[in-house]
Length: 127
Length: 362
Image 1 (cartoon, helix red, strand yellow):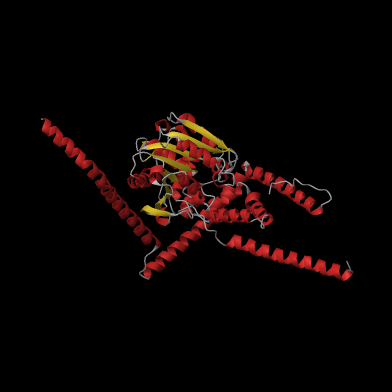
Image 2 (cartoon, rainbow over the protein chains, first blue to last red; image 1 turned 180 degrees about the vertical axis):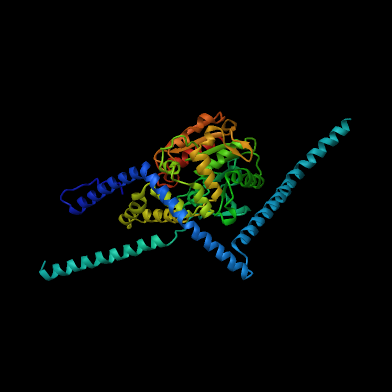
Protein backbone atom coordinates (compact mmCIF):
# COMPACT_ATOMS: atom_id res chain seq x y z
CA UNK A 1 0.00 0.00 0.00
CA UNK A 2 2.76 2.37 0.89
CA UNK A 3 4.62 1.55 -2.32
CA UNK A 4 4.99 4.59 -4.53
CA UNK A 5 4.63 4.47 -8.27
CA UNK A 6 8.26 4.71 -9.37
CA UNK A 7 7.41 4.94 -13.07
CA UNK A 8 5.25 8.02 -12.59
CA UNK A 9 3.96 9.40 -15.86
CA UNK A 10 1.89 12.64 -15.80
CA UNK A 11 0.26 11.65 -19.08
CA UNK A 12 -1.06 8.41 -17.61
CA UNK A 13 -4.29 9.27 -15.75
CA UNK A 14 -4.65 5.79 -14.16
CA UNK A 15 -1.11 5.91 -12.80
CA UNK A 16 -1.71 9.42 -11.53
CA UNK A 17 -4.89 8.38 -9.75
CA UNK A 18 -3.10 5.42 -8.24
CA UNK A 19 -0.30 7.63 -6.98
CA UNK A 20 -2.82 10.03 -5.48
CA UNK A 21 -4.66 7.17 -3.83
CA UNK A 22 -1.44 5.73 -2.40
CA UNK A 23 -0.37 9.12 -1.09
CA UNK A 24 -3.74 9.76 0.56
CA UNK A 25 -3.80 6.25 2.07
CA UNK A 26 -0.32 6.80 3.47
CA UNK A 27 -1.34 10.10 4.99
CA UNK A 28 -4.54 8.56 6.38
CA UNK A 29 -2.60 5.63 7.80
CA UNK A 30 -0.09 7.91 9.57
CA UNK A 31 -2.90 10.05 10.97
CA UNK A 32 -4.74 7.00 12.28
CA UNK A 33 -1.59 5.54 13.87
CA UNK A 34 -0.97 8.88 15.59
CA UNK A 35 -4.60 9.00 16.69
CA UNK A 36 -4.70 5.52 18.23
CA UNK A 37 -1.51 6.37 20.10
CA UNK A 38 -3.05 9.32 21.94
CA UNK A 39 -4.22 9.53 25.55
CA UNK A 40 -7.67 10.57 24.34
CA UNK A 41 -8.11 7.42 22.26
CA UNK A 42 -6.71 5.17 25.02
CA UNK A 43 -9.04 6.62 27.63
CA UNK A 44 -12.05 6.59 25.31
CA UNK A 45 -11.64 2.92 24.27
CA UNK A 46 -10.97 1.90 27.88
CA UNK A 47 -14.10 3.71 29.04
CA UNK A 48 -16.21 2.32 26.20
CA UNK A 49 -15.12 -1.26 26.84
CA UNK A 50 -15.67 -0.89 30.55
CA UNK A 51 -19.11 0.65 30.09
CA UNK A 52 -20.15 -2.10 27.69
CA UNK A 53 -18.97 -4.85 30.05
CA UNK A 54 -20.51 -3.18 33.11
CA UNK A 55 -23.86 -2.74 31.37
CA UNK A 56 -24.00 -6.22 29.89
CA UNK A 57 -22.92 -7.87 33.15
CA UNK A 58 -26.38 -8.09 34.80
CA UNK A 59 -27.87 -9.62 31.62
CA UNK A 60 -25.04 -12.10 31.32
CA UNK A 61 -25.45 -13.14 34.96
CA UNK A 62 -29.20 -13.45 34.56
CA UNK A 63 -28.77 -15.63 31.48
CA UNK A 64 -26.24 -17.83 33.27
CA UNK A 65 -28.52 -18.20 36.30
CA UNK A 66 -31.54 -19.06 34.16
CA UNK A 67 -29.54 -21.56 32.12
CA UNK A 68 -28.13 -23.20 35.26
CA UNK A 69 -31.62 -23.49 36.76
CA UNK A 70 -33.04 -24.93 33.54
CA UNK A 71 -30.25 -27.50 33.17
CA UNK A 72 -30.45 -28.48 36.84
CA UNK A 73 -34.21 -28.97 36.65
CA UNK A 74 -33.70 -31.18 33.57
CA UNK A 75 -31.06 -33.15 35.48
CA UNK A 76 -28.39 -32.16 32.95
CA UNK A 77 -24.83 -31.06 33.75
CA UNK A 78 -24.24 -27.32 33.90
CA UNK A 79 -21.29 -25.41 32.51
CA UNK A 80 -19.68 -25.43 35.96
CA UNK A 81 -20.06 -29.21 36.20
CA UNK A 82 -18.35 -29.73 32.84
CA UNK A 83 -15.60 -27.25 33.76
CA UNK A 84 -14.95 -29.03 37.07
CA UNK A 85 -14.81 -32.37 35.27
CA UNK A 86 -12.32 -31.00 32.72
CA UNK A 87 -10.16 -29.62 35.56
CA UNK A 88 -10.14 -33.04 37.19
CA UNK A 89 -9.14 -34.64 33.90
CA UNK A 90 -6.19 -32.27 33.68
CA UNK A 91 -5.19 -33.28 37.22
CA UNK A 92 -5.35 -36.94 36.16
CA UNK A 93 -3.24 -36.13 33.11
CA UNK A 94 -0.66 -34.50 35.39
CA UNK A 95 -0.52 -37.64 37.52
CA UNK A 96 -0.05 -39.71 34.35
CA UNK A 97 2.71 -37.35 33.28
CA UNK A 98 4.42 -37.88 36.64
CA UNK A 99 4.26 -41.64 36.04
CA UNK A 100 5.56 -41.18 32.51
CA UNK A 101 8.50 -39.21 33.91
CA UNK A 102 9.35 -42.11 36.21
CA UNK A 103 9.08 -44.61 33.35
CA UNK A 104 11.31 -42.47 31.15
CA UNK A 105 13.99 -42.58 33.81
CA UNK A 106 14.15 -46.41 33.69
CA UNK A 107 16.05 -46.86 30.38
CA UNK A 108 18.62 -44.28 31.45
CA UNK A 109 18.99 -45.95 34.83
CA UNK A 110 19.30 -49.33 33.09
CA UNK A 111 22.01 -47.97 30.80
CA UNK A 112 23.89 -46.65 33.81
CA UNK A 113 23.19 -49.82 35.82
CA UNK A 114 25.87 -52.20 34.48
CA UNK A 115 28.52 -49.50 34.68
CA UNK A 116 27.68 -48.87 38.33
CA UNK A 117 27.60 -52.57 39.23
CA UNK A 118 30.80 -53.09 37.20
CA UNK A 119 32.66 -50.39 39.07
CA UNK A 120 31.28 -51.76 42.33
CA UNK A 121 32.59 -55.23 41.51
CA UNK A 122 35.92 -53.71 40.59
CA UNK A 123 36.05 -51.92 43.94
CA UNK A 124 35.13 -55.11 45.76
CA UNK A 125 37.87 -57.02 43.94
CA UNK A 126 40.38 -54.39 44.98
CA UNK A 127 39.34 -54.58 48.60
CA UNK B 1 -9.41 -0.47 -39.67
CA UNK B 2 -13.08 -0.03 -40.48
CA UNK B 3 -15.60 1.27 -37.95
CA UNK B 4 -17.12 -2.20 -37.60
CA UNK B 5 -13.72 -3.78 -36.97
CA UNK B 6 -12.86 -1.11 -34.38
CA UNK B 7 -16.19 -1.61 -32.58
CA UNK B 8 -15.67 -5.39 -32.56
CA UNK B 9 -12.14 -4.98 -31.20
CA UNK B 10 -13.33 -2.61 -28.42
CA UNK B 11 -16.13 -5.00 -27.49
CA UNK B 12 -13.69 -7.94 -27.39
CA UNK B 13 -11.28 -5.98 -25.20
CA UNK B 14 -14.09 -4.91 -22.90
CA UNK B 15 -15.38 -8.48 -22.68
CA UNK B 16 -11.93 -9.83 -21.89
CA UNK B 17 -11.46 -7.15 -19.24
CA UNK B 18 -14.83 -7.95 -17.66
CA UNK B 19 -13.99 -11.65 -17.69
CA UNK B 20 -10.63 -10.99 -16.05
CA UNK B 21 -12.21 -8.80 -13.36
CA UNK B 22 -14.83 -11.45 -12.67
CA UNK B 23 -12.12 -14.11 -12.37
CA UNK B 24 -10.08 -11.87 -10.08
CA UNK B 25 -13.14 -11.26 -7.89
CA UNK B 26 -13.66 -15.00 -7.60
CA UNK B 27 -10.01 -15.48 -6.62
CA UNK B 28 -10.29 -12.62 -4.12
CA UNK B 29 -13.38 -14.16 -2.51
CA UNK B 30 -11.75 -17.59 -2.41
CA UNK B 31 -8.67 -16.19 -0.69
CA UNK B 32 -10.78 -14.42 1.92
CA UNK B 33 -13.02 -17.36 2.71
CA UNK B 34 -10.77 -20.41 2.47
CA UNK B 35 -7.74 -21.66 4.36
CA UNK B 36 -4.37 -22.23 2.75
CA UNK B 37 -2.46 -25.39 3.59
CA UNK B 38 -0.05 -24.19 6.24
CA UNK B 39 2.20 -25.99 8.75
CA UNK B 40 2.84 -28.86 6.33
CA UNK B 41 6.25 -30.05 7.54
CA UNK B 42 5.89 -33.66 8.79
CA UNK B 43 5.85 -33.95 12.56
CA UNK B 44 4.78 -36.29 15.33
CA UNK B 45 3.20 -35.62 18.72
CA UNK B 46 5.56 -36.77 21.48
CA UNK B 47 3.80 -35.34 24.54
CA UNK B 48 0.45 -33.85 25.48
CA UNK B 49 -0.93 -32.27 28.61
CA UNK B 50 -4.38 -30.69 28.68
CA UNK B 51 -4.46 -28.63 25.43
CA UNK B 52 -0.67 -28.42 25.11
CA UNK B 53 1.13 -30.59 22.56
CA UNK B 54 4.81 -31.14 21.95
CA UNK B 55 5.72 -31.89 18.36
CA UNK B 56 8.90 -33.35 17.02
CA UNK B 57 9.60 -32.52 13.38
CA UNK B 58 10.85 -35.46 11.35
CA UNK B 59 14.56 -34.81 10.73
CA UNK B 60 15.70 -34.59 7.12
CA UNK B 61 19.41 -34.82 7.77
CA UNK B 62 21.05 -38.17 8.71
CA UNK B 63 21.82 -38.48 12.42
CA UNK B 64 25.64 -38.24 12.21
CA UNK B 65 25.35 -34.88 10.40
CA UNK B 66 22.84 -33.39 12.82
CA UNK B 67 23.68 -30.66 15.31
CA UNK B 68 24.39 -32.01 18.78
CA UNK B 69 21.95 -29.75 20.61
CA UNK B 70 18.26 -30.05 19.78
CA UNK B 71 16.14 -26.89 19.52
CA UNK B 72 12.97 -26.42 21.55
CA UNK B 73 10.60 -23.73 20.24
CA UNK B 74 8.01 -21.91 22.33
CA UNK B 75 5.41 -19.70 20.70
CA UNK B 76 3.01 -17.15 22.19
CA UNK B 77 -0.02 -18.26 24.18
CA UNK B 78 -2.63 -16.27 22.22
CA UNK B 79 -1.76 -17.38 18.67
CA UNK B 80 -1.24 -20.62 16.82
CA UNK B 81 2.44 -21.44 16.25
CA UNK B 82 1.94 -22.29 12.55
CA UNK B 83 3.69 -19.09 11.49
CA UNK B 84 6.99 -20.84 12.25
CA UNK B 85 6.15 -23.34 9.53
CA UNK B 86 4.07 -21.15 7.25
CA UNK B 87 4.21 -22.91 3.90
CA UNK B 88 6.45 -25.34 2.02
CA UNK B 89 9.38 -23.45 0.54
CA UNK B 90 9.02 -20.62 3.04
CA UNK B 91 9.23 -22.10 6.50
CA UNK B 92 11.65 -21.47 9.36
CA UNK B 93 11.09 -25.06 10.52
CA UNK B 94 11.99 -26.42 7.10
CA UNK B 95 15.09 -24.19 6.99
CA UNK B 96 16.36 -25.34 10.38
CA UNK B 97 15.67 -29.01 9.60
CA UNK B 98 17.73 -28.70 6.42
CA UNK B 99 20.56 -27.27 8.52
CA UNK B 100 20.59 -30.37 10.69
CA UNK B 101 18.62 -29.39 13.77
CA UNK B 102 16.51 -31.79 15.77
CA UNK B 103 13.46 -29.57 16.16
CA UNK B 104 10.65 -29.55 18.72
CA UNK B 105 7.69 -27.21 18.99
CA UNK B 106 5.48 -26.60 21.99
CA UNK B 107 1.93 -25.70 20.95
CA UNK B 108 0.00 -24.38 23.97
CA UNK B 109 -3.35 -25.02 22.28
CA UNK B 110 -6.57 -23.03 22.75
CA UNK B 111 -7.62 -22.70 26.40
CA UNK B 112 -11.14 -23.77 27.31
CA UNK B 113 -13.29 -22.38 30.16
CA UNK B 114 -11.62 -24.85 32.54
CA UNK B 115 -8.26 -23.21 31.79
CA UNK B 116 -9.26 -19.65 32.68
CA UNK B 117 -7.29 -19.92 35.96
CA UNK B 118 -3.98 -20.64 34.20
CA UNK B 119 -1.31 -18.04 34.98
CA UNK B 120 2.25 -17.51 33.84
CA UNK B 121 3.21 -19.42 37.00
CA UNK B 122 1.54 -22.52 35.53
CA UNK B 123 3.00 -22.10 32.05
CA UNK B 124 6.53 -21.45 33.33
CA UNK B 125 6.73 -23.84 36.28
CA UNK B 126 4.33 -26.62 35.33
CA UNK B 127 3.68 -27.04 31.62
CA UNK B 128 7.07 -25.95 30.27
CA UNK B 129 9.27 -28.02 32.65
CA UNK B 130 7.08 -31.08 31.99
CA UNK B 131 7.32 -30.59 28.22
CA UNK B 132 11.09 -30.07 28.50
CA UNK B 133 11.44 -33.18 30.64
CA UNK B 134 9.75 -35.25 27.93
CA UNK B 135 11.68 -33.47 25.17
CA UNK B 136 15.01 -34.29 26.85
CA UNK B 137 13.94 -37.88 27.23
CA UNK B 138 12.88 -38.23 23.57
CA UNK B 139 15.89 -36.35 22.23
CA UNK B 140 18.12 -38.21 24.70
CA UNK B 141 20.00 -35.07 25.63
CA UNK B 142 21.02 -33.20 28.76
CA UNK B 143 21.68 -29.86 27.08
CA UNK B 144 19.51 -28.02 24.59
CA UNK B 145 18.71 -24.69 22.93
CA UNK B 146 15.42 -22.84 23.25
CA UNK B 147 13.72 -20.30 21.00
CA UNK B 148 10.86 -18.14 22.25
CA UNK B 149 8.79 -15.73 20.20
CA UNK B 150 6.70 -12.83 21.57
CA UNK B 151 4.99 -13.99 24.79
CA UNK B 152 6.74 -17.32 24.19
CA UNK B 153 9.99 -15.39 24.59
CA UNK B 154 8.71 -13.95 27.88
CA UNK B 155 7.84 -17.45 29.11
CA UNK B 156 11.23 -18.78 27.92
CA UNK B 157 13.05 -15.96 29.74
CA UNK B 158 11.17 -16.67 32.97
CA UNK B 159 11.95 -20.38 32.67
CA UNK B 160 15.63 -19.78 31.85
CA UNK B 161 15.89 -17.49 34.88
CA UNK B 162 14.12 -19.76 37.35
CA UNK B 163 15.65 -23.03 36.12
CA UNK B 164 19.20 -22.08 35.06
CA UNK B 165 20.54 -25.59 35.74
CA UNK B 166 18.00 -27.51 33.65
CA UNK B 167 20.39 -27.91 30.71
CA UNK B 168 19.45 -24.81 28.72
CA UNK B 169 22.61 -23.76 26.88
CA UNK B 170 21.37 -21.29 24.27
CA UNK B 171 18.37 -18.96 24.48
CA UNK B 172 16.99 -17.17 21.44
CA UNK B 173 14.49 -14.42 22.07
CA UNK B 174 12.43 -13.07 19.18
CA UNK B 175 10.59 -9.77 19.72
CA UNK B 176 10.43 -10.41 23.46
CA UNK B 177 8.16 -8.09 25.49
CA UNK B 178 10.09 -7.86 28.76
CA UNK B 179 10.60 -4.23 29.74
CA UNK B 180 7.49 -2.08 30.15
CA UNK B 181 9.13 0.95 31.77
CA UNK B 182 8.21 3.19 28.83
CA UNK B 183 4.44 3.56 29.14
CA UNK B 184 4.04 5.38 25.84
CA UNK B 185 6.26 3.19 23.67
CA UNK B 186 3.39 1.36 21.95
CA UNK B 187 -0.34 1.45 21.54
CA UNK B 188 -0.70 -1.59 23.82
CA UNK B 189 1.29 0.12 26.61
CA UNK B 190 -0.77 3.29 26.30
CA UNK B 191 -4.13 1.49 26.18
CA UNK B 192 -3.44 -0.89 29.04
CA UNK B 193 -2.09 1.89 31.26
CA UNK B 194 -5.08 4.16 30.67
CA UNK B 195 -6.91 4.71 33.98
CA UNK B 196 -10.23 3.85 32.30
CA UNK B 197 -9.04 0.42 31.20
CA UNK B 198 -10.07 -2.26 33.67
CA UNK B 199 -8.46 -5.67 32.93
CA UNK B 200 -10.15 -7.20 35.96
CA UNK B 201 -13.59 -6.50 34.52
CA UNK B 202 -12.51 -7.96 31.16
CA UNK B 203 -11.41 -11.21 32.81
CA UNK B 204 -14.33 -11.35 35.26
CA UNK B 205 -16.79 -10.91 32.38
CA UNK B 206 -15.26 -13.23 29.80
CA UNK B 207 -13.29 -15.80 31.79
CA UNK B 208 -10.85 -16.30 28.96
CA UNK B 209 -10.16 -13.20 26.90
CA UNK B 210 -11.74 -13.78 23.47
CA UNK B 211 -9.37 -14.06 20.53
CA UNK B 212 -11.49 -11.51 18.68
CA UNK B 213 -10.76 -8.87 21.34
CA UNK B 214 -7.00 -9.51 21.18
CA UNK B 215 -7.11 -9.60 17.38
CA UNK B 216 -9.01 -6.30 17.19
CA UNK B 217 -6.51 -4.72 19.58
CA UNK B 218 -3.56 -5.87 17.47
CA UNK B 219 -5.20 -4.69 14.24
CA UNK B 220 -6.12 -1.30 15.70
CA UNK B 221 -2.42 -0.55 16.21
CA UNK B 222 -2.28 0.00 12.44
CA UNK B 223 -5.93 0.27 11.44
CA UNK B 224 -5.62 1.45 7.85
CA UNK B 225 -3.00 -1.16 6.93
CA UNK B 226 -4.85 -4.02 8.61
CA UNK B 227 -8.41 -3.22 7.61
CA UNK B 228 -7.82 -1.79 4.13
CA UNK B 229 -4.21 -1.81 2.97
CA UNK B 230 -3.73 -5.55 3.09
CA UNK B 231 -6.78 -6.16 0.88
CA UNK B 232 -5.80 -3.42 -1.58
CA UNK B 233 -2.34 -4.96 -1.77
CA UNK B 234 -3.84 -8.34 -2.53
CA UNK B 235 -6.16 -6.95 -5.20
CA UNK B 236 -3.31 -5.18 -6.95
CA UNK B 237 -1.20 -8.33 -7.00
CA UNK B 238 -3.93 -10.82 -7.68
CA UNK B 239 -2.27 -11.89 -10.94
CA UNK B 240 0.98 -12.66 -9.14
CA UNK B 241 0.81 -16.26 -7.85
CA UNK B 242 3.77 -15.79 -5.49
CA UNK B 243 2.19 -12.82 -3.72
CA UNK B 244 -1.23 -14.49 -3.68
CA UNK B 245 0.12 -17.71 -2.18
CA UNK B 246 2.08 -15.87 0.46
CA UNK B 247 -0.88 -13.60 1.33
CA UNK B 248 -3.26 -16.56 1.57
CA UNK B 249 -0.94 -18.45 3.92
CA UNK B 250 -0.43 -15.43 6.17
CA UNK B 251 -4.15 -14.60 6.19
CA UNK B 252 -4.96 -18.19 7.14
CA UNK B 253 -2.69 -17.88 10.15
CA UNK B 254 -3.99 -14.40 11.08
CA UNK B 255 -7.64 -15.56 10.94
CA UNK B 256 -6.99 -18.58 13.17
CA UNK B 257 -7.43 -16.77 16.47
CA UNK B 258 -7.60 -18.33 19.91
CA UNK B 259 -8.55 -16.96 23.34
CA UNK B 260 -6.04 -16.24 26.08
CA UNK B 261 -6.36 -17.73 29.55
CA UNK B 262 -8.04 -15.08 31.71
CA UNK B 263 -5.69 -15.12 34.69
CA UNK B 264 -2.63 -15.04 32.44
CA UNK B 265 -4.10 -11.95 30.75
CA UNK B 266 -4.79 -10.27 34.10
CA UNK B 267 -1.22 -11.03 35.18
CA UNK B 268 0.23 -9.78 31.89
CA UNK B 269 -1.55 -6.44 32.17
CA UNK B 270 -1.20 -5.85 35.91
CA UNK B 271 2.20 -7.35 36.74
CA UNK B 272 4.04 -6.78 33.47
CA UNK B 273 2.50 -3.89 31.52
CA UNK B 274 1.49 -1.77 34.52
CA UNK B 275 3.99 -2.66 37.26
CA UNK B 276 6.94 -3.83 35.13
CA UNK B 277 7.76 -6.38 37.82
CA UNK B 278 10.19 -8.47 35.77
CA UNK B 279 12.58 -5.58 35.14
CA UNK B 280 12.08 -4.17 38.64
CA UNK B 281 13.03 -7.52 40.14
CA UNK B 282 9.75 -7.85 42.02
CA UNK B 283 8.11 -10.59 39.97
CA UNK B 284 7.31 -13.67 42.02
CA UNK B 285 6.05 -16.91 40.46
CA UNK B 286 4.81 -19.53 42.95
CA UNK B 287 6.89 -17.99 45.69
CA UNK B 288 10.09 -17.80 43.61
CA UNK B 289 11.42 -14.33 42.85
CA UNK B 290 12.51 -13.93 39.25
CA UNK B 291 16.05 -12.52 39.29
CA UNK B 292 17.23 -12.00 35.71
CA UNK B 293 20.82 -12.09 36.95
CA UNK B 294 20.39 -15.84 37.36
CA UNK B 295 19.87 -16.33 33.62
CA UNK B 296 23.17 -17.87 32.47
CA UNK B 297 22.39 -19.31 29.03
CA UNK B 298 24.01 -17.86 25.92
CA UNK B 299 21.56 -15.24 24.69
CA UNK B 300 20.62 -13.90 21.27
CA UNK B 301 18.02 -11.16 21.44
CA UNK B 302 16.39 -10.57 18.05
CA UNK B 303 14.70 -7.18 17.79
CA UNK B 304 12.45 -5.98 14.97
CA UNK B 305 13.16 -2.32 14.35
CA UNK B 306 9.68 -1.53 13.04
CA UNK B 307 7.80 -3.63 15.57
CA UNK B 308 4.57 -1.89 16.60
CA UNK B 309 3.48 -4.74 18.90
CA UNK B 310 6.73 -5.17 20.85
CA UNK B 311 8.70 -1.96 20.21
CA UNK B 312 12.52 -2.36 20.48
CA UNK B 313 12.64 -0.60 23.86
CA UNK B 314 10.62 -3.47 25.40
CA UNK B 315 13.36 -5.97 24.47
CA UNK B 316 16.62 -4.01 24.68
CA UNK B 317 16.88 -3.52 28.44
CA UNK B 318 17.09 -7.22 29.29
CA UNK B 319 20.70 -7.52 28.17
CA UNK B 320 21.96 -5.34 30.99
CA UNK B 321 20.09 -7.41 33.56
CA UNK B 322 20.86 -11.01 32.60
CA UNK B 323 23.85 -12.91 33.98
CA UNK B 324 24.82 -14.46 30.62
CA UNK B 325 28.45 -14.03 29.58
CA UNK B 326 27.70 -14.58 25.89
CA UNK B 327 24.92 -12.19 24.90
CA UNK B 328 24.14 -10.45 21.64
CA UNK B 329 21.50 -8.27 20.05
CA UNK B 330 20.49 -8.73 16.45
CA UNK B 331 18.42 -5.90 14.97
CA UNK B 332 16.40 -6.67 11.89
CA UNK B 333 14.54 -4.26 9.66
CA UNK B 334 10.92 -5.34 9.75
CA UNK B 335 7.86 -5.82 11.87
CA UNK B 336 6.79 -8.19 14.62
CA UNK B 337 5.87 -11.08 12.31
CA UNK B 338 7.65 -9.97 9.14
CA UNK B 339 11.16 -10.56 10.52
CA UNK B 340 10.45 -14.31 10.74
CA UNK B 341 7.70 -14.88 8.18
CA UNK B 342 8.24 -12.07 5.67
CA UNK B 343 9.74 -12.55 2.23
CA UNK B 344 13.16 -11.32 3.40
CA UNK B 345 13.39 -13.57 6.49
CA UNK B 346 15.11 -16.36 4.58
CA UNK B 347 17.99 -14.04 3.66
CA UNK B 348 18.38 -12.10 6.90
CA UNK B 349 16.88 -13.43 10.13
CA UNK B 350 17.01 -17.19 9.57
CA UNK B 351 20.68 -17.38 8.47
CA UNK B 352 21.76 -15.17 11.38
CA UNK B 353 19.86 -17.32 13.89
CA UNK B 354 21.23 -20.50 12.34
CA UNK B 355 24.83 -19.22 12.35
CA UNK B 356 24.61 -18.03 15.95
CA UNK B 357 23.02 -21.29 17.07
CA UNK B 358 25.25 -23.48 14.90
CA UNK B 359 28.37 -22.02 16.48
CA UNK B 360 26.99 -22.93 19.92
CA UNK B 361 25.41 -26.30 19.14
CA UNK B 362 28.58 -28.29 18.55
